[in-house]
Length: 404
Image (cartoon, rainbow, N blue to C red; front, side):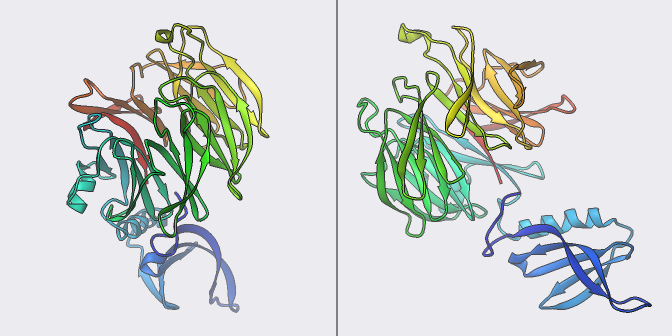
C-alpha cells in the first residue's frame, strides 16, 4: 500500500508500545495498532484480550471482538478507512485511449467488490477528458491523466476523481508519461513527432501545476522511472527508432549520462536491489532493417547484463511482481518470466495472447485486448496461483491498469 499524506488516508499497521494495567504494576505491552489519520482514529489490540481499543482524542473505548479475530477486524477497519476517502479508493482503474484523433479517452474503475464503473471522469466532472488517454500516474493524493491527443495533463483527486487543474500550453505537446518526486513532476513529450530534434521533458511545479522548465532530449522519450533521486527516460524513438536510456539528476535536472541499450526500449522497471531493467523491442521488420529485441539490466548507471533475443523476436510489456524479484514480459503471443538473479526466461503456459497492455499485481496477471480498436475492449485477469481467469469489458482501446 502506498504512503499517503495526512490530508487523506494514512493507513499504517505497525507495532507500538501501549500502556495497560496488570495485577503486578503498570506494564508496557506490545500492541498491534491501526492508525487512520483521515478519520483521526486509532485502533489497538493487545494479544490475549477479547476486545480492541478505539482511541480518539486520547480517549480509549473498549470494543468487543464478538467472536471475530483481530485479523478479521483489521480487514473491516482498513476498508472503512479507505472508503472514507472517496468512491474510488478501493480498486483499480483501466485507462482507455479512445479512438485516435476523434475519440474521447475514458476511465473505467473496478472496485474490490467486483462492480465495474465506466466513464468515471466524465461522470464526476461533467465533461469529457479529451483525446487519447495515454497514461495515468498516482502521486500522493493526486492522479495525473496524460492526454496525448489533447496535449494536456489533467490533475484530479485520486480517490474522488474530482478535477483539480489542467496542465497545458506550448510546453505540453504530445505528452506520453508522467512521474513525480518531491515537489516536481516530469512529463515526456514528443513535441512534433515528425521532427527528431525537438523532443523534451517538461518539469512540473506540483504546488502550482505549471511547467517550470524543460529538458531537451533525444528522439522519442517514452516510459519514465524514478529511482534514487534519478529520472530514467526510455528514448524509444517516437515514430522512428531510438536505442538509449537517459538518466537525469532530479535535484538539479541536469543530465547525468545517456546509456546505449537495445533498439526501441519500450518498458522499464526497478527491482528490489535497485537495479534497472529495460525491455527493448528491437526494430520491426517494416523498417527494412529489423533487429532483435533484448532485455537489459543497468546497475550503478552502467549496463551489466544484455540478453539478446532472436532476430524476429520483439518483446514488450515488461512487468515485475509485488516482491520486485520476478520479471514478466510478452513475446510472440506468449508470456515469460525470469527471476532477477537468473539469466534464463521461462515460458508460462496458459496465458497466450497478443496483448495491448499487461501488468502484474498480487500474483495476478492483467492483460488488455483492444480488439478491433474501434469498439469496447477487454481486460482478462489470470490468477497465477489457481490458473483461473475472469474477463471484464473495458472502454475503447484499453492500454493500462493502474492500482490504488
